[in-house]
Length: 229
Image (cartoon, rainbow, N blue to C red):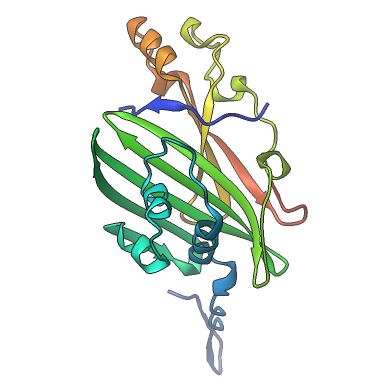
């Protein structure tokens, strides 16, 4: 079954071809279409984003304060925006009444016939605990449509995230997931998230969760516009 977002704890040059008469280089790659890039995807997400009560991410703060797009971007002190690889990753720190909150936004677009699927991951962490939320949306120059996770992600069983037989502290425990797009290429890494109570039980039992669990890698399949194993 598909996974719910959960509260979890922080763990732990161009090729050169030569011939007899002349040398030839590969033609330059066309500039990426900004309408299909993750920067435009995040901007369009923010136009209709309604954070749930209690969300402490910087994106939620920007929406609650009515900040414009430029001011929203300026909240993030570290910004990696890579249009050529259809990827961005922003990080920022805010101080709230309960302490410091660290937000990471990761977004990537996966192209298909003049449109792109946006995978947007926002994560915020405070006092050693993190929460994540995901959005999947189709976008193009004239279209923006959020779609259900199940329409683009295959059903994943908890057993796929465990190495060998699941330890007792994880049996019957529904895992969360975090979708992390690769910086390069067209893969999506799905990381298992262990609920806090189960994590504490595993620690008490001496179980190394890093060794007992593993991520699942999904591949973007252009022909169907979905991720597959």
